[in-house]
Length: 199
Image (cartoon, rainbow, N blue to C red; front, side, top):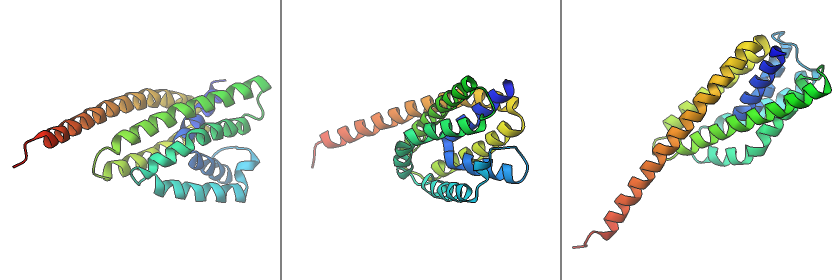
């Protein structure tokens, strides 16, 4: 049961950050014997489409404000995709376990997606683009690590996902608070500038 929970937690959380990377990684892990995954993930067409969409997201995710729009579009896609991935991975479980697993994966994907989107929106208030790219690369690394743990050590994946959820929520809240303060200061400076007497 813990193994199933860890698998679902890992793919659910990771799908909220990058669904296409999750599908591509599962297919590659299956092809190279790292994990036993359903045949659908091993299909060449599925791997090709997931790989191409991952490459598109890899580029788009590094561009400030464009990544915000991408996140808005994926607000429904990532959680629903996580539901589908979990449903396929738990095909050998009982019907109730499969339904519960799919729902849990969708919920975790929603939480990680919202933390990601909130963090990115806050970071994009900074004028320099490098922080955004660094965070995006970090997220890609997290996705790869969590999916690998989910299929090789599900119990460890469960622990890591729990920690990441807490850390991600705290970081997102702190960044939003900082962004609000910066926005307020900018508005005050602008107000003061417009109200200053002209020579």
